[in-house]
Length: 471
Image (cartoon, rainbow, N blue to C red):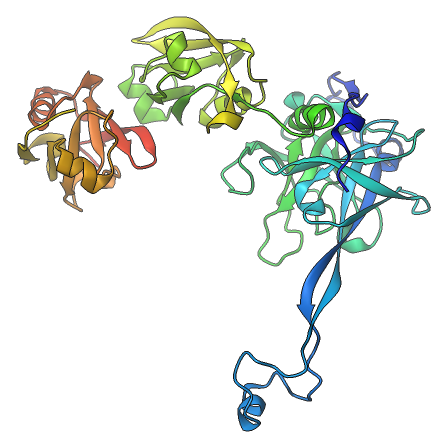
């Protein structure tokens, strides 16, 4: 059911309205004009998938374990249950984004489908749909139906959406037919759910239920601000916690899937973490904002541009960087090969680099045996040793990693509370390089502040850790 790539080369001609909402107008008694504008662009999506199954047993009570034992039928071997194929049905929603039949929906709505049917809002016109492409990393998919003269939705600039704006969810909840629910934008930039690799959800309390997936979240002008994707619920039904993929991100994915049938993402080649209050104080920053580079990949675009571990990224292509997730989304949303401007803070001074982004598709020596236990100061309860070949092998530490390896952590120490574990490698203390266990001890003893900034290599990568006296 995939649309052939050559048939999808023409860009989807979407309509975008970037004008701001009037947030000073009085209370409305009806939103019919908003619904009339957006509702015809929202479709039902019916899917079917052929799966292997077993017929029900032809023996009464054949699935009862006591019955099977009585008749000598071993557990797991039911009589008269031959293999057969059955059709599994699914339903969801989608949004028409172009007059000639391109439709946005969720990957999970069409995943594994053998057949996809699109039903227009009036419930009368049915079309077989081709799958242009999917992007599981954002849970977005694009369909194409062979017709023209459709009414596409107008896309808003989701960056201008504000908490408190009126929002409408339009879709096909529980298969009852097109429904409209109203609420507000509850929050922006939600992430950390583990639902997708790239999370930047708009949260809404507009009622969303199963079947709404892939449908439209629209603003007070009837413009698309998000693709409804999932809910957080203890009951399985609406509890006022619905989440939508912002229209700007959906537009990026749409354009690439239509043009190439896949999504290519930019690569910077760094490991980063958000700047919290402790890191901001340690780096002498005025506010907890930006993304600190904890590691630069060898031969990566970032290394070639001159970026170093410890740099604080505060700007990307002229836009401020709020935190780790913000930078990750900005880089991923930029095409490989793009020359991007990177603004960083290094030792309190602002620097700018030009980085030619790589492609995420292609990625993704001390000796001796001295050891010491930090019995005093902030490293109390921490034991480290020089990096020997034996310790590298024990903890699977790459040959290019240098520093002092942690071999034991007192569970009641500040180090344990900060998350340090055996096998971690301390590569710097207070931004001074650590070359050995004795070097780490010396730097720790020289520290006069009530906190230490450690750069640590873990099995998952590198990060900065703060040790505090009051931990």
